[in-house]
Image 1 (cartoon, rainbow, N blue to C red):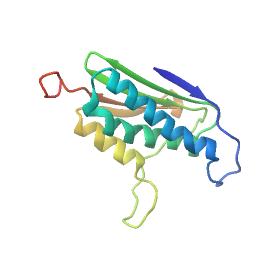
Image 2: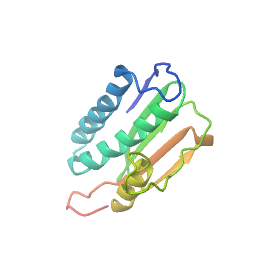
Image 3: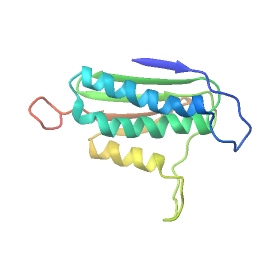
Image 4: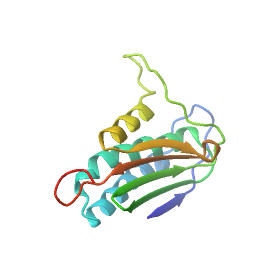
Length: 141
């Protein structure tokens, strides 16, 4: 499953438009529906959180159209978000009172919890995360 959408132009530091902010929830719903269709309900909540973080980062810090892809193959779910930015996303080290800066740390933690990985490709334009899908017997594949 792959979805691309345009991003509204906004001045630096301005909040996301309402239509762009709605895209995050739309992509989370699409991911959840796809996982339910594939009988992977156990991954719905972690994937929804990863999608929220990666799509929000693309909207807030990226440029141009955003493409969200969710694939399931050979026991692995892969989430990819691509935008037109040439800047690499950076893991931050926020202090306890910071309101931002935890997104990629959260993605890394969730990936680790599900025997997966995450990273950045194509000169910073594409952020990805993989999770191992639970086997039909209930354990990780």
